[in-house]
Image (cartoon, rainbow, N blue to C red; front, side, top):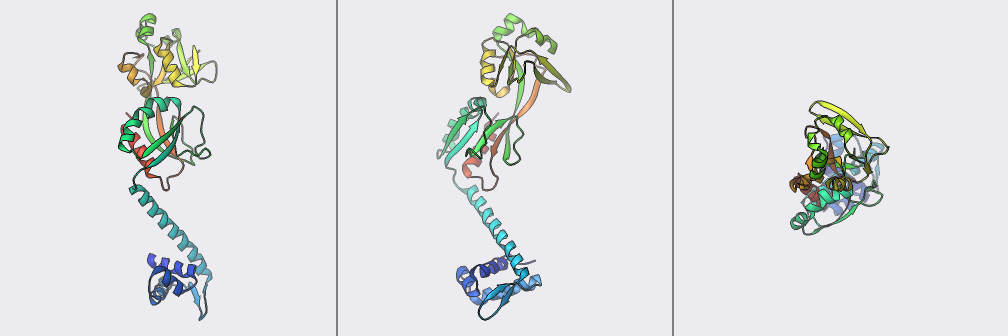
Length: 295
């Protein structure tokens, strides 16, 4: 196998156009340069350079080999940059986009302690329920739930949320929702649905190995979980909501789980960014922090 150092010397000779130029660039004696190129040719069993008293010329195989040496040098440089980025101190602005619900319920509560740990990192967060092209719009990172990430982007799973049926204590008491034992009984109640695209809505619900599709006429439809949650807290009905949105209100007694044996399909929350190559320390630190603190 060819020696990597000899390959880089050969590349320098071609780039500089002479053994003397390569020796100057690399800080080595000219005799060492010549010897390394000869050793490389011997190990390959092929002549890479045609030598004359006035000039050097690449052979056909030498030209092809040089192109590979250039790519190898670029990969080495890229690998070194990754190591440097990994060990560098996180600092600078993170341009982040996420949904209103994820931003308010998951991300915002963690930002103060993240800033304490990384005081030189600042977050510019845009909350929107539209799908954002993070490359086209110049975002460093997106936090998204329930989507299969674009194959052109890099994703990291940060959290898996469960979805359960909830109602307010007021609704449970007045409508006797605590007496519900079968899914079909939900037809007798006000059900609120997130992002229904038709008059009929459906929940895919699971109880152990049992699966059931519950279709219903929603009393309200909305494209924002937080708005649905507020309607539920105010006694407006029953809805299927993610656990991360409801934990505090459950503890505060504002929400009660209905039909606790049944739940929706779990939803993954991803950190999505444009490229794995040379991920900056600030992005890596933020993703690691979210992964360690989202519960």
